[in-house]
Length: 152
Image 1: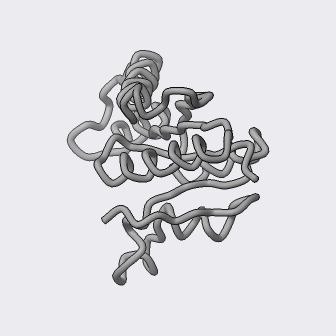
Image 2 (image 1 turned 120 degrees about the vertical axis):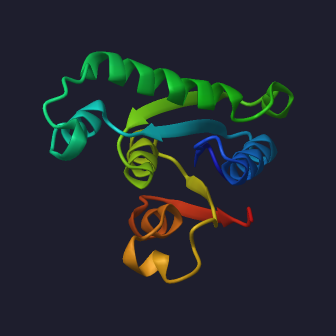
């Protein structure tokens, strides 16, 4: 049924539960699993630092910062799920700059994913109407099915 599954993580316990369930779905269906970690761009971080306030005029090493962001995202992906859970599953890791929802959707489009797995964290309360949430944005913009798992 599924050949390609995309799931995101930020290293949190709730994201870990979504990854665990996506891995189990991949195992049951024989699908490949795409683990995704989005990180903020160094350009946006440096622009914020130089836009005024106490940090105005501070030079920011965006190349070094970008490398640090990528390294941190890759560390999160490496720790996303224990190796025994991934045994027998083809896993591809994607560390990308951008917002979590945009990166998940981009990877799903590129990999022709059958389903994106996201946790339900952020789906409740007034905050979802003002700021939106990753599950809401993905559910409304995904190029494929979306599985929202209960992680809280």
